[in-house]
Length: 447
Image 1 (tube, rainbow, N blue to C red):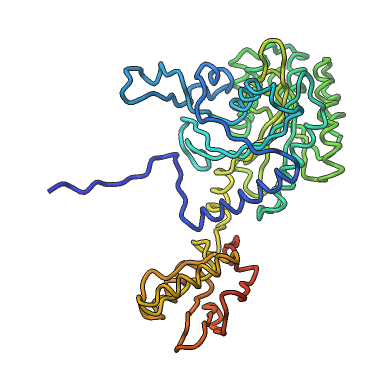
Image 2: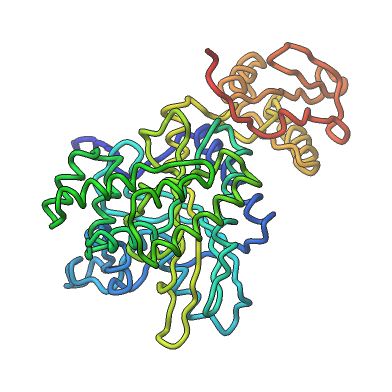
């Protein structure tokens, strides 16, 4: 006798229960609606890219790229020519280069897809997850106002979701770059990657890492002094100036960040925060960078990030600078489930269960369901013609609010709200499902 096969989950590849998936779909619907309200056009790119394009674009993600090979191939994963994309910006840049002659610029797109990273799974970090991106690219030059637009779109998305308070932290890579050069630190990229670990390891370890990388203790202290500056208004400019460092690149970065924060003060006061510790580890960012945290769950880390890139999309003759921001959708959903206890009000889209009196009359139940569906009311037909009490319990376990009884007692149809117990006569061609019950709602646990 063959031993039963034990099914075990694969770490880092999350799967949701039905009510949780409905919560995720609700969030997706809101995200798509807002993105389209702002004129972003939908796009989907292939899952794989040439490995040599992926390597070198992702900073510390190089060793996390999944190689793709055929099982029958003699090639090892290390020698794979193709890899699964680790974000959506790199494939988007490639898409722009391939289709530049057929696109209208500035080109605005949104993209909601799975991405893969071979990192160590932990709370809020996965190997397979969904991102929701918006980007704007142009030819040659990109107007700076787009850098202010990105966080404002995200602010509108987040205000429509049950997230509570949130903060979009904004920096400009030219500020630390110019500051580091001004104090004599020439390895800008290396210093940025170390400072980017502040939230993970704390200032003492970052100081040690900077000194180990060649900085003097004084340079490390000044780098941390810059990273400590944070404001919801333009006061960060004077605070940086007070540190006594001068460099043209620093001036450019301060002007650019001030322009973004000024727009935020006008349209989303208190939401956009100038935070000079934000560095972003990906190597392709060249200007404004963003990270977003939910107030009260800052330890979860950023749930939305991005920035400006000037050189990622270039064919050697023409460059297509862009700016984008990405919601870590899977990360956000798991935070809401694990930390906030959110879920959907039911585990099925169905608002109505059409009961079956007996198997001979199942056709009548199907006709009722067809009439309801034709009017946009989601429903399902009971799987078995069991006692009505059992069919009601079937609906209750799934959170279906209404049970429809066709031709009860030889008369007309009736529908029952199983929450209140109210049962009334009804016609499938005219009955109105209450709007609040038509689709699953987002619910939070009762205190």
